Amino acid sequence: MKIPDHLPWKSTGKTLGSGGQGNVELVVHKGDPNGRLYALKALRRVESPQARQRFRSEIEAVKSLTHEAIVPVVDQSEPDDDFQFYVMEYVDGALPLDRIIFGGSNSYGADTLKCLDLFEQVVSAIQACERSNPRIVHRDIKPNNILIVPDGSIRLIDFGICQIQDGAMVTLVDENVGARNYTSPECEAGNDGQVGIHSDIYSTGKVLWSAITSQSAFAREAAVFGNRSMQTLFPNQPDTWHLTHIFEKTIRENPSDRFQSAQQLLHEVAELRRIISQGFPPIEQVALRCPSCGLERMNWVGRLDPDIFATQGGMDVGWTCCAFCGYIVARDFAVLRSHIERTQNLN
Image 1 (cartoon, one colour):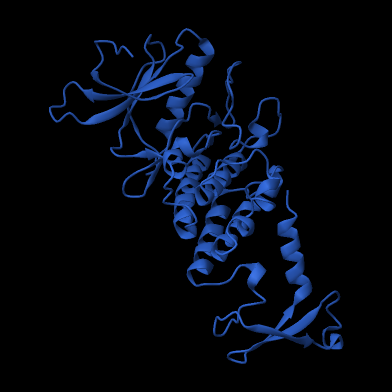
Image 2 (tube, helix red, strand yellow):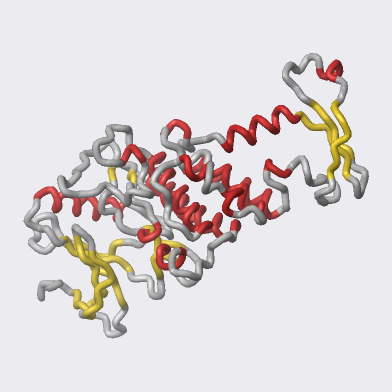
């Protein structure tokens, strides 16, 4: 990349990234005696009006967002400049999430609470996009667009194909809208579905799935509820099974089946963190573990007299007794079976 001499930025010679629309280089400010590092992203295809307009939209999108997980812009080109660029703060030591989770030593793998912390940060970043004016949909949330800082915080990057809602959107003819296995169905080429916050929610759910499993996301939704479910992949780690509560309202083909706001999703994360931290079993095990002493020694005693529950049609109430502490629990097994079957049959 050749940075024009009149600009106050000088390349260090290190390329940080390269894509279809632009390159990112490590630079320093010519007037800074301390040599503080920055990241300069420059548009490669300046001759294309569509590419230029898209790049300008990216600049305006990032500039409009104020959030600790989104790197701020410190300098930028003017719309008519021949050299189109913007400069961001550089986060030293940050690694793309894909290098961590697919690199053979995934620090998030099978660690439910750590994955929830990661997930919460990404959702918080898309909440900032949701609340911006105009609203912004990232449309390309995937592991390599999430940087992990040494202190464990994240930075969401690459707003190159974002959509600014209620405004014009430019899609290049030869451009993929997002990473195939992470992008939502409505963001795929040829799909005329409505794009919104629910689109980023879908992708963020798949990032969570990859983080916990150390696997690249699957192409379609059914896998997470079938042969790639938490119960199948982690049969001896039932705390991971709780994540199905997130997957069942994020990784869904129909946008109406997903959480409709980042705030709803953040509330669910808080609930899951609470129940996991306090040792509550997943729904598949609630009939086995005693709610009094916590041991998995609940024995079936029998059904209760249905006449007692005559006003509650469809109930199948029985009781179990803990073989250790003697605690007796009455439960509607019809409700329990219904929730388990519904989760297992989602697609």
